Image: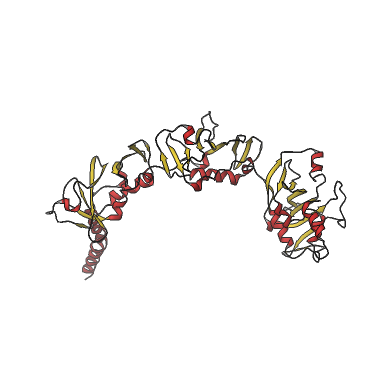
Length: 478
């Protein structure tokens, strides 16, 4: 009985369980239109696009290239999907071989897909849709009658020409870019280089670059997709590329251009009479760009340079010191005999005199990510600083964090000097550790006190006795 039980268990395991998987695999293989064929075996494809254009694409070293009707890179995802559809194409049912194939659309009106795989050429003949269900009639050049296969599989073999072509304007690896050179009409050429993990401006000024903005530019270029192509040659004037509205040269690799570094170029044309823009990328063929992709490329030096005046993690701040100066002198104005200090205690901000409810958090939020709208000057002399209200500053903000372990001095998280309020340019500011002079957005006046008058307005219990003239003086910086 033990032997019988063992034999029965072996039969169930090897035949019913393991054998079932093998039989299902054999059944699926027998149902395939092209049995024993893998997608990776296909070396070339010849097919008709949805518009009726005959295309031939060849695969070499894993890359697809269109060789007819013109040589152009193919979209790898689309071509791989077509190869997979052919390799996995399976019959839903066989059709009576006694019927003429013409009644299934497999005659003069049929569409053919030819391909080379496993050392020989194969042909798939595609006919009409079945009257019922969601299948399509197909046959092979080897004979054997017609079969019905899922139409969704066949649809993968009839793509528009636009989907078959590689629509990437600039295929490149963002992490491999070592240098970026930018040009646009009316502006000085801008050059940016990668400095370890950060970007640095080297022309027209030497300054830190806005790494987030530069990375966004590379991302916009890498994901730029054409909505059409212009294959016939056009003059630079007709294409809007004389001169270009925007030019980029990307040096790839660690070596500079001309010393082993490969340069990828992009040029954006002006809007033409039809309301579209053309771009020149890696080929003579011009790319038609969509309307939503036209404003991704800032044409302003300030857009690419670092303009952060102050930045820190708000939770790390434990003290904010503020002091004000009388116009043209280091003397404190009015009752500001000593610097004002906000101190964090038990998670709450306290001060004496007290600020209005919510003002302390507003100050901290504003200072933690204080961005300039423009860099007014790379540096200015002492007289110019005085004229801008920065010698001495109208207001000084200093944010301190906890002292590092083993050190007694508090860590300075940010320090900002505020000058005059210029109605045309904004709030003048600078950092004591840098030479640049910045202009901050006028909305800063709603969040930070820029002089002693506006500071008094933010104290608890203040406001009722402040007349309109005082508020106007505060906002004008006088």
